[in-house]
Image 1 (cartoon, helix red, strand yellow):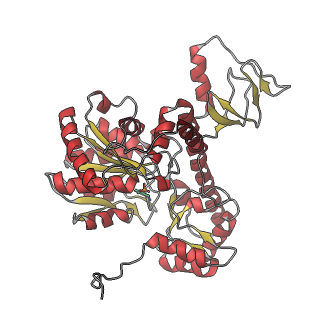
Image 2 (cartoon, rainbow, N blue to C red; image 1 turned 90 degrees about the horizontal axis):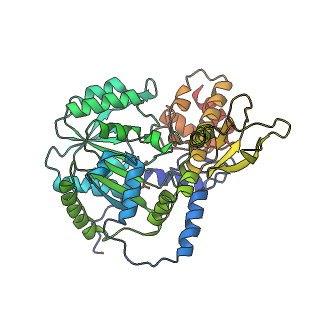
Image 3 (cartoon, protein in one colour; image 1 turned 90 degrees about the vertical axis):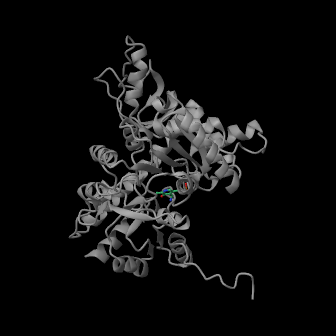
Length: 469
Ligand code: PMP
């Protein structure tokens, strides 16, 4: 016998179980659509160029390995909160936010929910979307926090069930906590539209509920970090004092570095200081202080304007050029059609070329001579690059299935956003995909679009067509 003879075997983690089965499969055709991490078109992990540069810079600084403060570096906390709430958010003017570095998004959720068990004075009930990320209910179970569901995903349309959500939320007991995925909902890939977020904000305010946002994918949904923060910023504008869990696992590819943050909006600086004092006690007794390296990378990128653009720039370059021209409205770049360049603006600007414009990496796809500007260019910045690849794989998958003459509707593949797609495949179809086609995914029909590449997209489309027709 051992001290632990009473311990029973726990169930294996669903996602990790899939990866294990995939690894054991010897078929050359095998595809892993279970992983929750971005892969490049070769199926390899992707290290963001901005992260590489930040690593070089940090390496040269030869920093020491002293402890970080309990809540992480203040500069990091300030920078990440600004990325979420917006540089000009009023919450920073009156110092009403309490932000600490956490062990990535999971650590932020765990710390936030634990704080609720100890310090939240209203209804300690967590309301989650149905379905939600599996770790949400698990963390609540660990903390003995009751959790319930509100309608979110509509299997009939494979889209957002606005009416169902509004109806359910309007019946949640006052003072309860409502968990919201800020963007790129996991596992469904279904997000409310902006006007739907406005309606949700209103009913949540009417019901006097406390919104807890989980933002694990800022930038991943649309390629635009500001756009993806719409819901949070709108809720703040509506007067909600939200709580926010942030992660840099996906949008900076820092999975194993565990860089995240938890923010409480507290209404005033006095309350924020009190909350901070208690959060610090909680952290101190759990892991004492957070890891350094990931947070250093995040801060280097956010605080360095060049790296920030490399990482997060997203708009068509046209608008940047216009912004720059606004400084000097008399400057009119001319297009030289014989050389295909804009010599007085930038001699390197030729069709197809990849170059840096105002520190933003771009590829020139078209130069327009008839307007007083250079036209559409493709931004090659890191997050946009990942978001665009995922969007193009969605298009490829949908057109592959439809092109095969499949009788069902597949528009939801391109309507949904972010890393995941809730295909609508039934468990027996999923089983067939795995058994007959060596394609691995979770039983609920969720696929990680990041696992699709230009090499396997036709194969996956054909397989989905075959198991559904
Ligand atoms: N929330 C959601 C919805 C997620 O999908 C994830 C990542 N799978 C996380 C939080 C947190 O991930 P991490 O702890 O790696 O930051």
